[in-house]
Structure formats: C-alpha cells, structure tokens
Length: 67
Image (cartoon, rainbow, N blue to C red; front, side, top):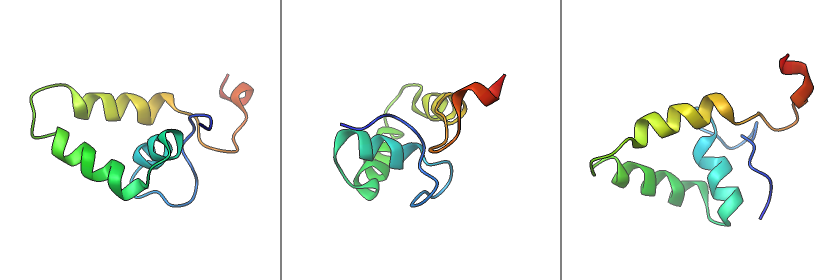
C-alpha cells in the first residue's frame, strides 16, 4: 500500500478516488463506481469526500509549506 496523497495525474475532480484506489490497489474507475453506488445509501459519503479533498495533501507538495 502506498501513502495516501491526491495524485496530480489521473484524477477527475479532486483526486480523492484516485488516491484511495492507489492506496487499496484497485483502479480509479472501480473506486469511482463504488463511491457513486455508496451515494445511493444513506450516510455522509459526500461530506467524507469533501473532507478528504481538503485534508489529503497533493502528491509532490511539501507538508511544511501549508503553514
């Protein structure tokens, strides 16, 4: 498993699904389908996606430059 960071390539909106797919060893398309199907169920999936978009660093960015 690789580190959890949003890639700069291969992403559609924010790279959250691409990052999760890389982390869990699946394709980004599979992760996107899983996310879309999960949105049909009750729960905070969309809020979790937004939180990951904000909290996950972009690949290649330094963590210390945020402050």
